[in-house]
Each structure stands twice: as C-alpha cells, then as structure tokens.
Figure 1 (cartoon, one colour):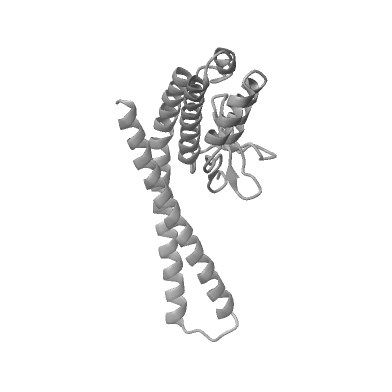
Figure 2 (tube, helix red, strand yellow; figure 1 turned 180 degrees about the vertical axis):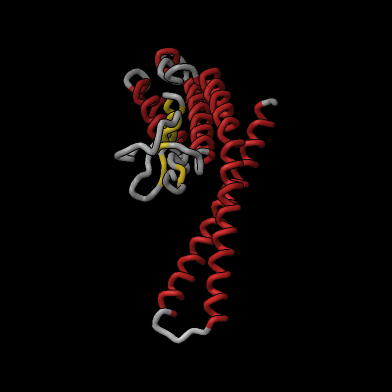
Length: 230
C-alpha cells in the first residue's frame, strides 16, 4: 500500500469512527431525555402500556448502544495500526523534507546572498512549515477517538504511544507527540520572524523589504479543534 492509499484508508476509517461516535452521542441525548421522562412519570399516574413502552424504548436504546460500541471497537482495532503506520511514514517524510531541526541552518547559508536568494530561502521555509503543520494537523485530527493521552491530563488514561498537545482552554490542540517525536504546530509568522531577524544585522535594508512581503496575509492555523481524549 503506497502512502496515498494508506492516507485515504485511514481517512475513511476515521470518518466511519466519527460517524459511530455521533450516533453514540445521539443515543446519549435520547437516553437522558427518557431518564427525565421516567423521573416525571414517578409522580404521575401511568398505565401498564405506557410503562411497557418506556421499558421497550430503554431496551432498544441499550441494544443500539451495544451494537454501536461493538462497531466502534472493530473500527478502532482496524484504524489503530493503520494510523500508527501512517504516522511513521509521515514522520519519515518530515525528516526527509525538513531534516532534524528543519530550518536552523538556513540563516548561515543565506548571509551573503542578494534579495532574490533571500526570498527564495524564505519560500523554502514557508513550504517546510506548511508541510510540518499539515502533517501535524492531520495526525492530530486522525488521533481523535483512538486510545491516546492528552498532555494536560493530570493522570494519563493509559500507556499509549500517542500524546496530543492540549487541550487548551478553548478545547483546541497544538499538535501531537508520536512515539516520542513531537510534531507541534508552529506559527508561520513567528518562524519567518526568527529567520528574518537572523539575517537583519547584515542585511537590514533587504530584510525590511522582505518582511513587508513575507508577513503579509493571514497566519497558518497552529491548532486542531476536537474533543478531548476518551
């Protein structure tokens, strides 16, 4: 299976898992509604037919929930190894494209260049950050529903090779740590500011022009919004 096939397989399985989770949430809401009805019924006259109908509805909900949980376990069992394989291949791709540290050596290689070369290096940096953020966002999103830990948990849910960075106060995540490798989402603006500042001492005039061009437009998102780990 090539990387594209693997990606779409994980995407399909993840979509199926999220669909099951949505159905479970619906059942939870209906179950709460029926519990409220039962609480009211305790204080009202209710005939046998209505009582039997409530019992039958509860039994149907329990059966539906059990079936959905069975399907969910099956999807997680199929998605979990495929997700980890995809994560490994994507991390290898990050290493191949970005290398260790990614862009730390770029300023030293760019000090003696002209403006056009500086902009070329800056574009390379943007592409690397975009690739990094894309991989980090996708892997973070695909981890939803899997047995992972959140970095803000006081007590981890279990021994998992995946830890998501968050959630923050607004419920969003800033990346993921996979098998000890952190893929934290980064700000394109902050990374470009670092690059330009490294060159600024010797290329002040050129850097001012480059900043105007490179920092224009919206920043890349550095968080993935999702529910906390189960």
